[in-house]
Every structure is written in C-alpha cells, then in structure tokens.
Length: 274
Image 1 (tube, rainbow, N blue to C red):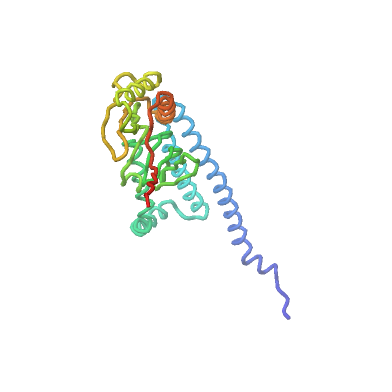
Image 2 (cartoon, rainbow, N blue to C red):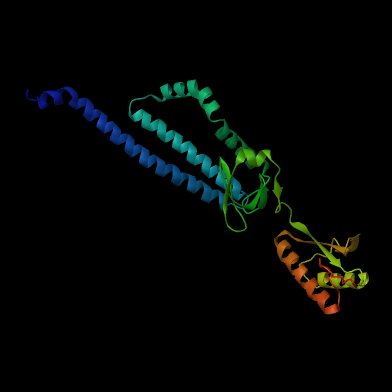
C-alpha cells in the first residue's frame, strides 16, 4: 500500500480549499447578517410608518414587506459576489431567466401585482371586517402575497391577493354606519298597531340607534302563519351586532309582557268521531 503524501496534496489543493472555505465562511456571515438586517429594516419601516397618523397601517405593512424583500435580494447578490460572481453577470443571467421565472411564478407575481392594487385602491384595510373569496373575517395583515384574516371564532384564513382582488369584496366596515334589519312575525289575531308601537318604543329606548335616518317599522307581508313587521334602524358600524341582538331580545320580552304572540309551526290533532 502506497503511503499518501499529505504534504503534496495540501500543497496542490490546500490553497484552493482554504480560499473556498474562507469565501464560504464569509458568504455565510454575510447571509446571516444580511437576513437579520433585512428583517430589522422591514420591522423598522413598518413601525415608523404605522405610527404616522397620515399613513394607513396597511401601507405601513406593505412598505415594510417591500423593504425586507428588497434587502434580502441584495443580500443574495452580495453572497454571490463573495464567491466571485460579478453583479453584472448575475443581472445578465437574471435577465435571461426572467421569462422562464415569470412563467413558473405567474401565481406569485399575480399576487404581488394584486397586493399593489390593494395598496393603491384600498378596498379594505387592517381591522376591517370583510368577506373575501366567500370567507368573512377581520383583516389582520396584508403583505405582498396574501391577506391574512381571522374569522369570528379566531380561525386564521389566508386569502391570496389575486383571489381577493378578482372576486367580489364585501367590506362591512367600509362605511361609518350600517342598517340593522330585523323581521318580526305576530299572530293574525294580535293588534298590529299595538305591536308596531311596542317595537318603536324599544328602538327609541336604545341610545345607539340614530334618529336620522328615522327608524322604519312597517307591516311588509302577510305570511302563511304570521303578519310580518319589518324594522330598519341605522347605527354606527361598531354597534351593529350589539343593537341587533338586543333588539331581538327586548322586543320578544316586550311582546310577552304585552300579550303579543309570535307564531311558530305546530301541529293540531283533530279527533274523529267514529
């Protein structure tokens, strides 16, 4: 068995390995520090912009994400330069691969473009309760690729921006006021005017209901088993659910106290004389 001449091997390959090791270590250091700087700068931009009263939180988050991705791209270019790849060569290669990358990342690029459109047109913002792509929830975050929502029972929903902007958007927080619509049914034998007066009294007693536009309380339909009375009351958007739930409960209690019955499906047994 021949003896291995380690000295000769080192003299032949050592300098190249040492040079590569130093470059690899330098690239690793640049990568770790660069990614940390990217995250820090993104967070800093987000923090600074969101504390400005004239800048919406949605735009702050968007700018933060944009800065983080831009710095991350610069870090990877710097890592390649550590290995001796010139930036000009990298840009040339990147340009040659643009078409292929664009075709393979159509969905991601579409989400980025849609995210920019959301930032510009602002159909919704952070904190709004919206329905996107058939799912309703509160907007928690809007980034370059997706909109993050939380459903009322606190389930995280991720909606790609392209789907959010292409579909029908329902923004329940879009206007400062909303109309509470509640339909009450009373028995045909009950006094309609009395029932209307009871409902109007309950509505007027709630300070959250706006006096203008004036609340609407009218008989709107004669159903199969009930006389239907429609109510429409305007409130602040933030009071919508509280007013609706309280109105249903208090009208039911007032009906019970005043002898107004709410019909419900029931069966009547008819005995036959044999």
